[in-house]
Length: 184
Image (tube, rainbow, N blue to C red; front, side):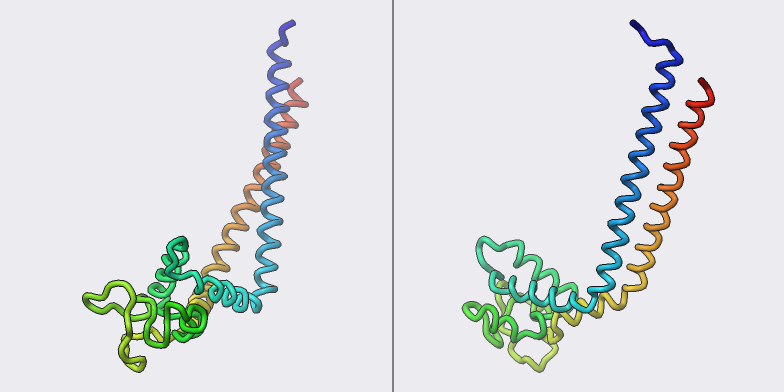
């Protein structure tokens, strides 16, 4: 028994209504989760320094190991990009990985580029401009503080776009339902 054209049209409209209704619900759920993450990030902002510090200190032990290439790469990128060495200062390397490092024998990225340097570098003079003296936790914190307004503005802009997406999806679902009811 074949369905008539009008019955197929109604089934199509109901499908679209259900689709946009589910889409609206999912957008609302994502919006609520993002709002909760933003609020918890703001509330826990003072604890982030300790969390990041613990994470960085724990990974220093694996720097340079054969099976920890990603950790080595990430540490090198952090130290070069943020112009820093260690978590709080360069002595963190000797404290956390004393099998490989001491006060002057540090990862190459703790020292500013020296012509012809390969592998590990012994920064000859800690008081010179060769050694990166700032800890990465301070450099990273300064970076976040400097860009906090931009991060907040981007978050608000995304929230506004999502809010309008929710409104339009609900409106479209309502119009589809009304058109399906009034047409037949």
